[in-house]
Length: 317
Length: 207
Ligand SMILES: Cc1cc2nc3c(=O)[nH]c(=O)nc-3n(C[C@H](O)[C@H](O)[C@H](O)COP(=O)(O)OP(=O)(O)OC[C@H]3O[C@@H](n4cnc5c(N)ncnc54)[C@H](O)[C@@H]3O)c2cc1C
Ligand code: SF4
Ligand code: FES
Ligand code: FES
Image (cartoon, rainbow over all chains, first blue to last red; front, side, top):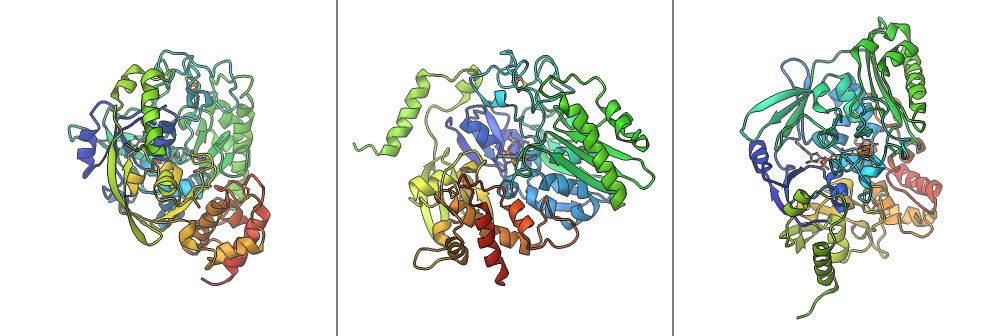
């Protein structure tokens, strides 16, 4: 690991200002950043510890929703009584990710900003446009079983690996931030993650130094919430495909899918077809997909997982 | 001048990086990294005792426990959060000590396997692992035991898991819950079924 300076920030604005320095990074739970630093994939010269800013509270908003502090641990978010009751999809997605130990450290903002699990990104001996822009993509033409089938480009076919982000997308979360000049803004979850295009190293719409203070959820939408994750072992593994569903009694609802794209994949025109069943929804959702021979199975898996989840939702409703 | 093995390794690593720059790391990022290790003084409350130490900021909590404090009960398996051998209890919660920095825990309370119990005074979970043969080589065992102690607390505190059938009712103390919650602790020897038996026995005794 490269040597770095370590400081504890004393306010969100100060953290953002400090992060303008070349080579500076925030550290929250550290479970993704330290992993990557040990491999020399991330090489910050300054670490700004944001764990002591009091951003670990979940509060009700005047609009009837919830404001989740950026440093709320994944365990605490999943276990919050309001989340369990009104945003069950979020609890379920969190509990399907990582392990008990990791969820005790992992934070709301860190989870959203975790980087891809593409095996070539992790291997510094391989060319990778995300890790080293312009060097090429070793995954294309390589082993791609885990990688994305839609939203990809000729430069990168990596997925975003977060389970929690799938629920946040289906729930229309907003990301609250503060920038180095002290100004604040709110970014819709749909716009947080960027598609790779020619710049796979630019993964989000955050500016340099921009600091996430909270994630807000609008008032509860009701319905039956189900998160189903399909993976190679029954626990402690990333998704091959995951489906987050909110189904209303009248048959309408929302669908966001994980494991298939560089960002949580939700297509409003596809979920409008929910009353017609899983086949119609997944065909529209996956329109324009460019799978490889290795990951073509994900197209079928999305449809079947959605069919199973829809059947389960109708049973429990 | 006496050079400890540890200092020698650090010096060795610094010199080596000056010659060999790993492939595909941007020059900018390389230039931005510090030339000298940064040191930091911290205090950890380890197994009930305050311990002051000066660490390189890069030192993980795991390395601080093992290399600086010589508490070698906590094991390093993967060093990447994938096996659970390094599980300790920090400020009341089980965590992977390999994926957190010692400096981030300045002022924290840490309990390791040595703090749970020693051969002359075993923690009930340690005694149950011995009784049920919950290990073979024993390498994953300290992590398994620290995790298991915390798992029982998590269930008592009502924290749900992936296999809890309902999110609104308290989780049950059943094998399926224990298996899911222990999934972050890998055992290469495959002692899983005996581990679950040991935890179940402790769980049945009211805390
Ligand atoms: C073995 C293993 C298995 C896993 N399995 C899963 C899984 O199945 N599903 C899943 O979803 N995840 C999984 N994870 C990933 C895990 O969820 C993430 O590592 C974790 O959520 C990251 O959160 P953190 O707080 O530790 O982030 P950190 O590592 O602290 O930070 C991650 C990034 O976010 C930035 N950052 C942090 N906070 C802020 C902020 N407030 N504002 C701006 N930037 C910020 C940091 O600078 C860094 O770039 C797994 C991880 C491991 C190691
Ligand atoms: S798919 Fe993306 S992350 Fe993976 S090697 Fe190609 S450029 Fe890198
Ligand atoms: S050594 Fe920490 S999880 Fe493997
Ligand atoms: S007892 Fe050998 S790894 Fe678990």
